[in-house]
Length: 310
Ligand code: HEM
Image 1 (cartoon, rainbow, N blue to C red):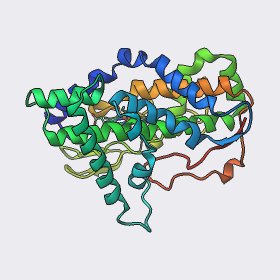
Image 2 (cartoon, protein in one colour):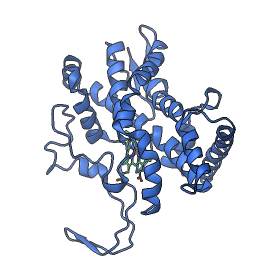
Image 3 (cartoon, rainbow, N blue to C red):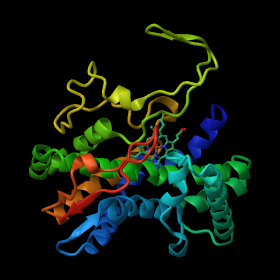
Image 4 (cartoon, rainbow, N blue to C red):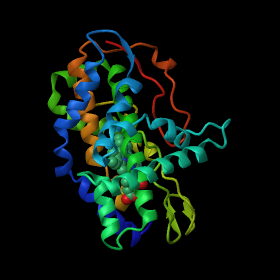
């Protein structure tokens, strides 16, 4: 979506995601992380994707949107087929979208009847009070925020934990210097950001970059992953180096479509990793890194499972 519609709609949600509003979630997010970790017991083994990296952001976005407990589920089953399509199941994406839209239709109807102090109720009020949001836009926005609200964050948490477990020197340095967490999150995002591509761009006029001319109106897929590992910008880019200046990475995009949820993504990743390291001091990978299975996707970098012992 482009201006002016994009500007009008983005303005309605950006307020909910300012750094100040999101900082107020620090304690509740930590409580959610602790609740999940309570279930681990003092020692054992687990798949961190299913037991921790996924339920944390899903719980947080459900809290924020106001999705009641009985309607919560592991939404990954719906969005996995969109982000990492299985070529042997060609109809699966359509079915998943239909299921998600059905779920949201019911949810929006329930919320209209019983509004509460949550983001969905706020957006419904905006829709019903004036002409600032059409019914269709309300539905699309609910879909986008739910989906975007956990999809990438789940993967970044998994990728960050894997990065630490495979770089023991970095892990030790971070444990010893927890004040480095905010910078570490930027480096996690640069090194193994989950969104490999930006939102599609369409040049409005012919543009030449290096030796390539892109004609106006062409679809352009920008590789955020390649930019984040550009040796001219980040020396020795394959190395996870929590001490480096990772600012300027493109893991959350750039420009007018810059990730609305960036403050929330940063907060959740910081808390997820710090709570995990605090609570599970002997955390270790329970497989050869070469055996790890990644989602089969050209646009999303994330683990199917992250087996650990603790
Ligand atoms: C680690 C987690 C996340 C990553 C890596 C990520 C990454 C991105 C990227 C790359 C874009 C496209 C930017 C561009 O093309 O310039 C984007 C857009 C967006 N993200 Fe995120 N995101 C994350 C978390 C979230 C969360 C938690 C939310 C909401 C709760 C969210 C909501 C959105 C929305 C609504 C857009 C579209 C913005 C627009 O078109 O104006 N994201 N994100």
